[in-house]
Amino acid sequence: MISLNMNYQKLNASYLFSEIAHRVNTYQHNHPDKKIIKLGIGDVTEPLPPACIKALHKACDEMGSRDTFKGYGPEQGYSFLREIIAEKDFKARGANISPDDIFISDGAKCDTGSFQELFNPSITVAVPDPVYPVYVDTNVMAGRTGLYNKGRYQNLVYLECTSENNFIPELPKKQLDLIYLCYPNNPTGATITKAELEQWVRYAEKQKSLILFDAAYEAFIQDPDLPRSIYEIPGAEKVAVEFRSFSKTAGFTGLRCAYTVVPEGCLVYDHMEAPFTLRGFWNRRQTTRFNGVSYPVQCAAHAVYTDEGQEQVKLLISYYLKNAAVIREALTSMGFDCTGGENSPYIWVDTKRDSWEFFDLLLEKAAVACTPGSGFGRCGEGFIRISAFNQYENVLEAIDRITTLKL
Ligand code: PLP
Image (cartoon, rainbow, N blue to C red):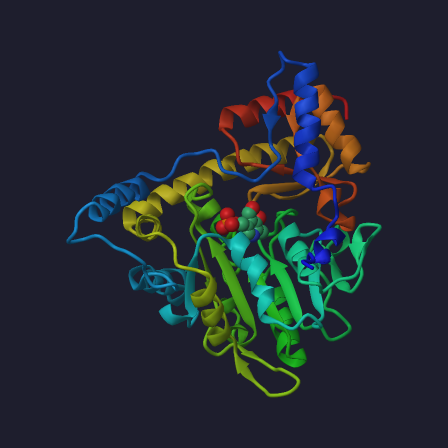
């Protein structure tokens, strides 16, 4: 008889964003005249850079002619895109990453979710708390955890990120196999220094662990001293995989393009036979399960790296960072401790009360929707996440409404 993967039954039923949508819809239903400003879900609002649109049009025309038509492309991505990424995102910053280490995909969500497939169900996995939920749920689905109880899954190691440690988890005392890190962080907006990241690289070398480094928000880093890639730390190419995305960098959330870096020197020390080259495993996985990102989309991603594209992308990022500054300054002047919003599009606000209570307060009193921090993990309790992804005028209005409240 057919039977289901009952690990799915373990998944925490109240999915954060559906609960938010439910409360927002109920409020709108009861107050049909109110304009709700959504500073919750991290989707972009501004259109694609013109350089990308131009490249898309050109590529579509090529698809319409027999001479230039493209069918299936390489599963790993076209070399024109892999080469420019290696050059501009890594070699230019002193990181020795080759085009063959880069795998183009249709999203960092799929890649951060799928990478765990390469490993045995019995490995020890550590995730930050609060966390981007994809890391957790995909390990639950794979059967690597026990049941969910009081905000945590059994058998998963939670790396606590709190205001006491500036949202950078302490190095674990015990050996861990797979460690997820994300900087600039979703949801806290925190960033990591080179010295702090180096400690994690040294830990991974010593413990023979693998770091999965999610740098989806790298483009928001303004401080020249902060690392944009884990490969700026010498030795990281042996112990870390990095995920990048064009979603927030260039407004590709609806177009879909991202990439994962698996350096050739990245080895995995299996108990039985050691060591294995991880890149070959990921290549095997991708060539089996994935048929590549469409040619026009890869052309649009390539356009991000042209001079024109770079200028336009910088404008996009500064647009959202201006929103972030407005939010951060207003909340800080109201007496709230805020993290993020300077090198990241998220502002993590310590509300000093229950996350959902504060969420409801902002919704009811200001018609502003944010994200309750507790939805990202136990350490998120007491916080809310405010996203800078909205139109500037809406952000100003939202802040105007919030600052007139007595909170
Ligand atoms: N990683 C983090 C930390 C994110 O916050 C997101 C999206 O919000 C993603 C990955 C997903 O990116 P993509 O749109 O490329 O799937």
